[in-house]
Length: 345
Image (cartoon, rainbow, N blue to C red; front, side, top):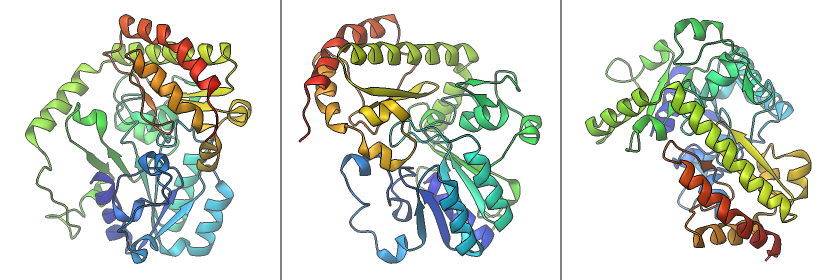
């Protein structure tokens, strides 16, 4: 609902209809955003969803992720009709796929030049990879070679950080962590755009569960508990778990690459992924995904539940302690051997 509201806001603010999204970026199951959506759509090998009229998807332009030439060409052709570009700051629905340096900044530049809005989807990364989400790491902290440059002190950002950021989206959507495990999502953004929401403006938004008190309290309490020590501990656990798994796969002779964003990471299978990494949807779909099912079930038989698909990321939380890391380490060698023995269907 947050991404749906952001799209409606962008169209209301600009008076335009077209939305640009990127293949492998998932923004919920609203009709216009399901094309090449990653997540469960990728798992099922689906192009989108039945029940979605072509007239709706015709308003969505799907471009390859991390492809600046394709994005610039799109704006040159139909820039005056584009209401918004929506993107995950650091995609996590085709596996963990990092943006190329300057990619998000280029989206911002093109949107500004052509009068479109930039919608940053931080449903997965918001309040997880950093108190300020992926935007805080990249645009404020200056994320360089896997670590922030230290341009801002740890903790929640304020107005001065926004003013000094390399790029700033017009709208941002949140979910997952923001609700503390309860069903809650949020959309935030420029005051002049947010003021278009009813009853102040003409863009309608409402829902039976909007602003649910229980979910809101759970979310607030979660954010209060998430001090820098929690982030440091969870990120360290993610690093340790990914290293354990990678070492086991290497020992079993399985070509792979681990791609990590804070406490989110993915294992990409295959020689191509190992050699050059995965940076778009086509590369994600080209990996040796058939190795994942036996890998998954081997872990599961040892009491370790992994994400149900190679395209879903591994989430590490504050609940994962030494006992859980030891269980993963004990189960990893057999799981790696199962992946090594797998055959394509």
